[in-house]
Length: 368
Image (cartoon, rainbow, N blue to C red; front, side):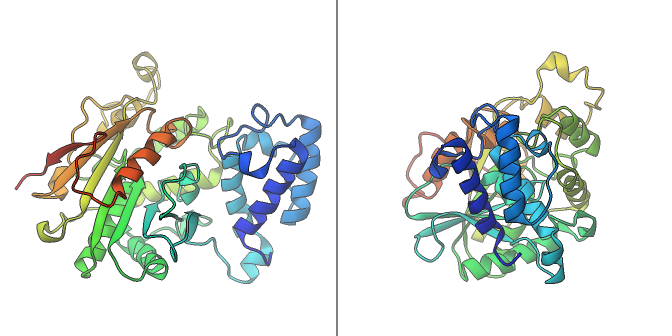
């Protein structure tokens, strides 16, 4: 393939628009192929044929059942194009960063979001527009299409992302963040940049448990959630194998990760956003067979007993932390309608005056 993944995706969206009669700009990442777009088996067959011609690769007849939303299929497209023989021959890989909104060259501020355990920055694709002056860049894992090669430390992989971020924005101040394991990744990127003399103005931790206070997520939890279709919109038959494989590599990295507290003199403004709901109701939780003595499992599945800093204050000694909560659980918060609340909070964060009180936030202070 000589075109980029996103150029191919634009052509695929054109196919969907042509076959459904829905304008490209009205097709949303959260749209369900069957329910929202009205794609029946006959239309699906025609769409699949057109997309196979564009992608130069065969797709199974069940492709839209395995990836039933536009976003799920988009993530799958990223993977299959990276694995295409033509790409492999050129030693091509998925891009380490994707511009989702605005332009780093013309916007006043850029937010860089690090990926969750799946490794795909497309988790952030449905965030509504933040502002005309804000660019949103999502980072991909360098091992997204080859999780078995992800054997390095979180400190080392952070270095790969820093190089890419500096390509987009050579100097600070930087605005960084991440959802779930992306919180660990963004913390390490921020701390490394600060130690190198750069300024990080804001760090956004989106429903990310603090590593010193929480264990690495057991793989059995990921497998259970995948089997039962509880990992967002990855698919009704569970998450694709590449997602689960990358989660496994991420968990290994998190297990070995020991974050170093930040220097009080150079600390960014820290924003912590918690999801208010658990993934499963209490009566179902006890029937999963999972080890609920593991603190991080209860954190994700059951929900939070309180919405304090949950240990993050120990990594920001003497720093100011701003807390907010949103609807949804750990996995649904990045989908409609909850994702709209995230956009509102991000608008707060990029506001010109970070010192002014924000009605959506509660301010707390770390220990001195």
